[in-house]
Image (cartoon, rainbow, N blue to C red):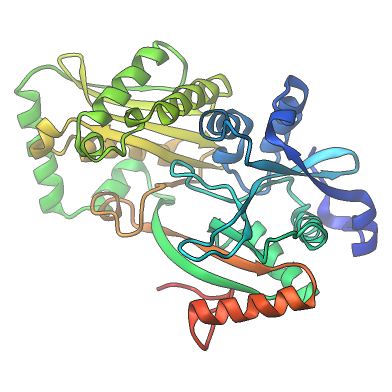
Length: 387
């Protein structure tokens, strides 16, 4: 599956070698296609666990039973080389403006396609060519939760310039990221003040006075079903449960979580951290391991012990990711300006929402008017950086 990009074909040759087509997601939920999909994930230009087979199919089965989402598959030289879930939406946020968009649900924290390394530009060309020919009622393409650096973004910029295709960054934000050459202890010392470190040691000691305090890290499926039950109950017991936004608040999201974590463990993609008091979990965390990166997917803590900061104590243990072979960084998957993780993880990842012109001249002219209406007289454009 790995491609040698040193002898890149011409645009015309690449078009002959590459094709993109849209398929109902259920038609791709087969053992044979999942095997090719898993191979693609191993050689992807940028890791995205949320678009790997074990996560995306779990989400589709639970959240899209009506089959409104389709998967754009990109093939090169007869092999699967790209995956992107797409849906045609009748509304653009509060406006009745139809558009094509990547499918990003409330528990998907990165919208980047899976693309074989070295084929980033052919992928974008094939995607745009398909959309130009099949735009239908969609006035433009909207891509959410997109990384605004790296090879996929660089290839996108290059193809947009090559084709003279208009695009705009309509929203950008920075979220916490862990990426450092420091060891875990050194990072902890440099990240937090001496006063804060002393306070955490005090909280750890006081918590330990209430019972036996233990920590466990696992990357297998030992008692995974029980761990999932405990996590769902712990998250639901707090403010998310009261607000109706916990995974266990809805049967569909609970099902997705169970299936996704089981699939991640089977693929060797799951790491679980648990802080327990007298064998009862009081803080839990699930990471997705996708070399060379990782993703801090979900965390929960027992709010009865909030004064001891169990979630922060668990994040102190999570810094061991810095010492893990093959992992260079971890995306927090947290909202911008998160009150807890932003003070521990000091690096930042820039993500955003992009709108891109598709179709013929009239449709593209209308797209330009829409962008100007959304962003004002001076659209920020795709090269905008947030401070």
